[in-house]
Image (cartoon, rainbow, N blue to C red; front, side):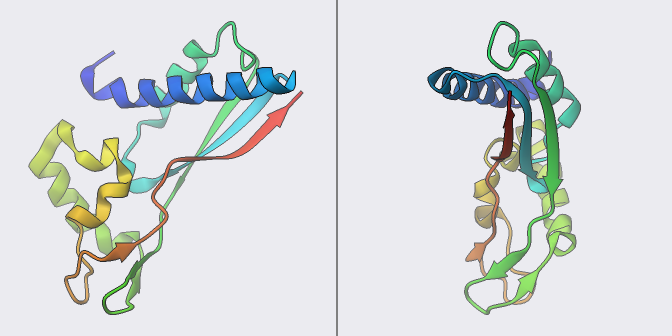
Length: 141
């Protein structure tokens, strides 16, 4: 495991611990978990899946399958009302990735995007979007 893989492993650990506790309280086993991840997080899905598969052993998720959906969020500028897609944000994210390298802040906390990215129309940082990593579905046995 490399240092840049640590976020995927800590995310998988948090996911397994939280869902294991949830399943234990309800007396259930978990068969499938669907996780939704915003594309600016640039998570490595294969590392996240490997971490999940390793960490789920001896838990109520032992037989669970992890499905990860990477979504491209839509953005809205609160200053001018402009609505835009990921394709208009990508050049700024590429520049940010080049500037920070493996310390890329949106990899760790995608919700920081308005701090680093500006509205393509007016230049405001007052941008809203759904950027959290969330569990969309849990299938139980």
